[in-house]
Amino acid sequence: MKTLPTARASYGKWAAAMPRNWMSDTLLPWFDRSKRDLPWRRTTDPYAIWISEVMLQQTQVVTVIPYFERFLRRFPTVTALAEAGLPDVLALWSGLGYYSRARNLHRAAQAIVAEHAGVLPASVDALLELPGFGRYTAGAVASIAFQISAPLVDGNVSRVFTRLFAIDGDKREKEIWRLAAEHVPAKRPGDFNQALMELGATVCLPVNPLCLLCVLKEHCEALKQGRVAGLPPPKVRAARKALTLDVAVCRRTDLLLLARRNDGGLFGGLWELPSAEPGKLPALLGPKARFGASLGTVRRTLTHRDLTLRLIATDVPARLKIPAGYQALQWVGKRQLAELGISSATKGVLGEIGFLPGR
Image (cartoon, rainbow, N blue to C red):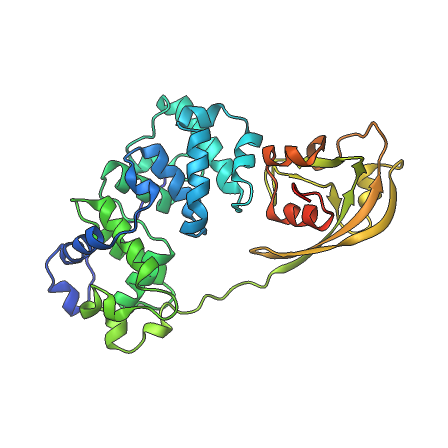
C-alpha cells in the first residue's frame, strides 16, 4: 500500500524555537484576505475539488477555469463521468493537454463507482489506490475536501519551502515533503495547503518574487542569505527527442478522414489524421492508397519531443481497414470536430489545411 511521508522533527535553530503552528497562524489570515476567487473554491464537493486539482497540474489557472466549468456541466457527478465513454471525456478535454490525466480521471471514476458506491473515499490510503492518484492529488483531495491533515507539494509549495528553509542538495524533495507534513495543521489543513500554493503562485514567484509583500519574509532563510534568485536550483531537463511523422490528408468533398489512436501512449485515445514514421504511410494505409503533393509542415514543441508533421495529400479506397495503432476511422465534417477529442498538434494540422470551423 502506498503511503504519504510521515513527519519527523528536524529544524534549524530558529524554526525549532517557533510555536508549533507558527506557519499556519501566519498564512491562514493572509489567505483569508488575499485568496483569489476561483470556482473550485466555492464548493465543498469532493468530486469537483478532485477534478480541479487534476486539471491544475501543469496547467495555468486562467486556462483551467473554462475547462473546469464545462466539464462539470457535462459530467456533474462521479457516476456521470464513469458512465461516459472515454471519447466523450477526451473530447471535452481537447486542448488542455497531458491527456493521460483525462484517461486516469475516467478510470478512477469507474473504480470509485465499482468499489466505493460512487463516493470518493475520505482516506489518504484509499485515495492512493485509485488510478492517477499520487501523493499530491491524494493530499489535495484529503485536505481540501475532507479536512484531513495531509500534506501536499506541487511546484509552488516546493518553491516556498525551498526558499523559506534554504533547502538544496540531492535530497531536497524528500526534505520538502517532510516539512510539508510537519507543518500541515489539524485545523483548516485544506486552507493551509491552498495558502501555500497561493503564496507560491502570486508572491513567491519563480522569477522576480515579491519578497517585500510576503507574510513569511521575516523567517525566509533564502532572503536572509541573499539566495532567493538561486533557489530552487534550476532543473536539469532532458533534451527533447525529435519525432517526425508523415500525415495522410484524405479528403472527400467536405469530409476529412480521421483515425482514433489506441488508448495509452502519446495522444492515446485521441482523433487525428492517420500518421506514420517517414516512408511508412503505404504500409499503414495499404497498397491501394495513393499519395500526392506535400501540403505543408506543422511543427510543435511537446514536453519531451520536438514534433514535425509532414502533410501529404492522400487518396484511400472506399473500404479501408482500420490501420495498425488505431481503433476507429471516421469521415468528419468541420462541425463534427467539437465532438471529438483532438490534440493541439492535430488542430495545428487542421489549421494548415484550412479545415477548422469558420475557414
